[in-house]
Amino acid sequence: MRFRPTIVVPAAGPGRRFGGPLNKLEQPFDGSTVLGATLRHAIASQLPVVVVTTAALAPLAGELLAKRDIVVLDGAEAARGMGASIAAGVSERSGASGWLVLPGDMPLVQPATLLAVAGALGQHAVAYAQHRGRAGHPVAFAAELYSELIQLNGDDSPRRLMLRYPAHGMEVVDGGVLLGVDTPTDLETMRKASEQPAG
Image (cartoon, rainbow, N blue to C red; front, side):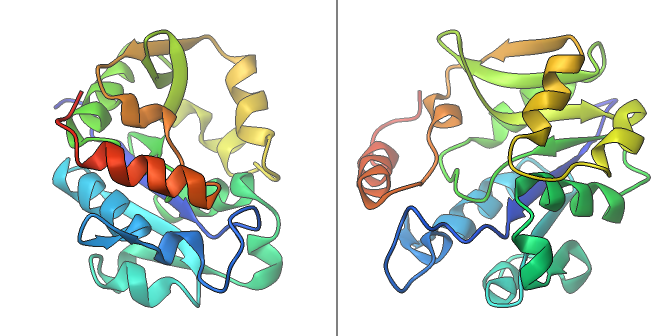
């Protein structure tokens, strides 16, 4: 592939909507955990991967990634939302040809989907996966947006950035691009979906 953007996996959010003593990213999923399954698919794409997480979750990420590929945020930084996590990941891989943002709670997104969206950066500054016309993740940003990406802050700032640039929707058969874990019900739905054939 001509463009080999880095996959940035934000995994520092508190997941308050999920509830319970165990972070949603630590929940068992497909023989691993939610975060583990997400990272496993990211690694299988053979694109570079960096995860942005907290000290509590860093050992979980460390089961699959080298220490150099794990960015640990303190509590105050993590509380600043997904935008801050994306900024930290992009800063850590400043020399990349672009960045794919794949939230850590999206374990059904397939490696082929990541590669399809990565390929779209050859023609577009912003690209994202869509399934049956509905926008999902990953969202990809080209290298020329670096200076804006490292200033992201808050949960809605990535969306605002997408609105400022023409964004290309890459249609995929992968319904996992629409499915993230916010609640226990989401998790059960995704566990059932993971047992079905892809697509």
